[in-house]
Image 1: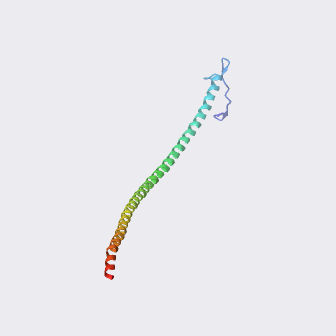
Image 2: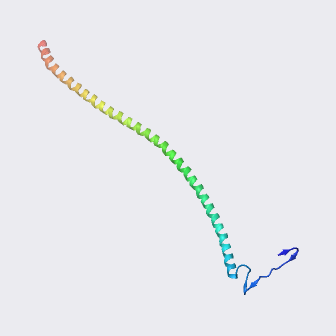
Image 3: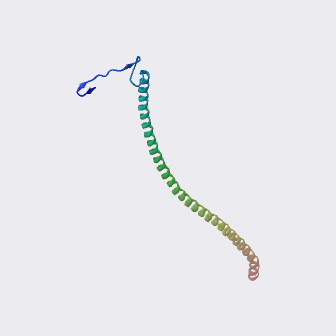
Amino acid sequence: MIACGQHLNPKRIVFSGDTGIFFTYKQEIELLVKFKQLEGCKLEVEKWKKYANDADLQIDREREAYNYLNKEYSSLLVVSRDFQKKYNDEYTAHENTKVKLADMTDKKNKWVKSTFITGGVSLMIIAPLVYLLVH
C-alpha cells in the first residue's frame, strides 16, 4: 500500500497470541466465508430474477397463444352452428319430401286402382251393350 508516496507494509497486530484488531483469526475466516456466501447468494438471486422474468415472458406468450386458439375456437363454433342449422333444415326438407312422395304414391296407386276398376266396370257395362248393338 502506498501512502503519502511511501510504501507501507502494515503488520498484523498480535494481541494475546491471536491476530487481528477487531476479530480473532477464526472470526476472520468465518467473516470471509460469509462474504463469499453473500456473493454466491447475490448471484443466485440474480439468476432467480432472470428465471422469473423468463417465466413471465413465457406465460405471456402462452396466454397470447391461448387467446388466439380461444378466438379461433369461438369462430369455428359459430361455423359449426351454421352447419348444424343447415343440416337440420336439409334433414327436415328431406323428411317432408319423403312424406309428400308417400302421399303422391298413395294417390297414384288410388288412381291406378280406380282407373282399372272404372275400366273393368265400363267394359262389363259397355261390352254387353256393344254386343247387343252389334248382334
